[in-house]
Every structure is written in C-alpha cells, then in structure tokens.
Image 1 (cartoon, rainbow, N blue to C red):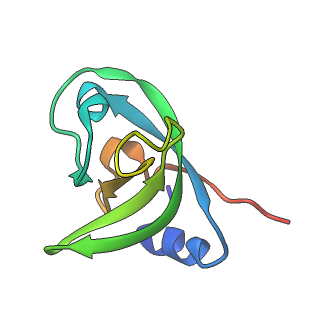
Image 2 (image 1 turned 90 degrees about the horizontal axis):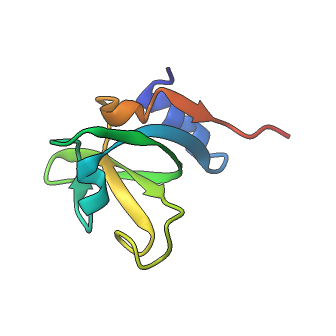
Length: 97
C-alpha cells in the first residue's frame, strides 16, 4: 500500500493509476466527496489520480473516471483521502520511463 504522502509526491511527476472496490452507492455518485456508505460490492474499477484537495476540513483525491464526461463532476470524482476507502490507496500504479 502506498501512503497518501507517496501518492502526492508521485502526482508531482504525473498521474497515478489506481484500482478500487466499487459498491452500489458509487453508482449513485453525482457530486461531492465520495465515501462508501452502503450497498453490496459490485466489483472493481480503475481510475486515475490527478490531484487532491481539502474542503471544509475533509481531505480528498481527485480521480478521473472512464465513464464519460457526463458522469460525476465532468467525468471526475472526489474520494475521501487518507483512510483507504474502497482500497483506493492500496493498488496504485506509477508509470516509469
């Protein structure tokens, strides 16, 4: 598992691919900071970390999704950062030249 700090450092060099567990509630995401709350495990999915931030004291990752620009926040979603929600911080893939 990568740490939040190591992912942030990697983001200074480019994007970071991740895989995470998808639960039913993720299918209903439209905006805001996602944190798994309910539903069965539906499978897994890939996304790309492109940044991070904090809103009202809640730290989050900015992740690009592949489901189209009409999904979520213009094709992106924000996921709570630092608690490995949905195992998003477990399986990161960094490109190397």
